[in-house]
Length: 213
Image (cartoon, rainbow, N blue to C red):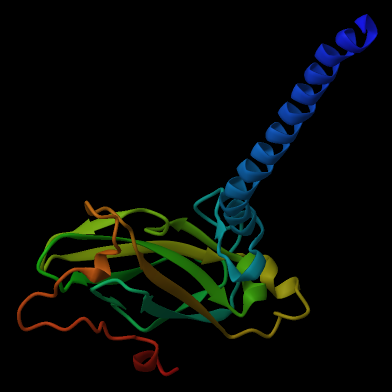
């Protein structure tokens, strides 16, 4: 009887340890799942994987080539009540030259709305060579009703792009931005669920067609 009584506390302690390890393991897995998204975004920005533009570590390339490349600008919205479009549809620059482009965003709703932009380039392989120096991406932007904001982006194309066999004859790169809503209202609903201002529409023009596809 004494032997059996003595083993019960040991079993209880063992069970508690096992339960604690399981809880810690599952907690760690959940934490890793949440961390995976920002870590993946950082990886894409650092490497250009998936057409993600690289974050430049310097403002200028080490050289400028006597070769032109055209940068096309695309703008899209995903549930944001904004008119969002590039000021100019394209620009032709020298490879290695630092250039600046502008996007324009106008809030078409009758109350302030907040959005955030993501971006990529096409073809995807060019993402490793397209360096942004200054950008409005991944920054929460709030516009008042009817407010228009100029959104500049400064960039250059790494001259090493001509050394990539798949890209050595590339003539055009498309820089594409998409605006997504940021939930900041009291009910945690997307800003696109707001009531549109009188005389306006929920539909925001998609500029891809105006850029020639």
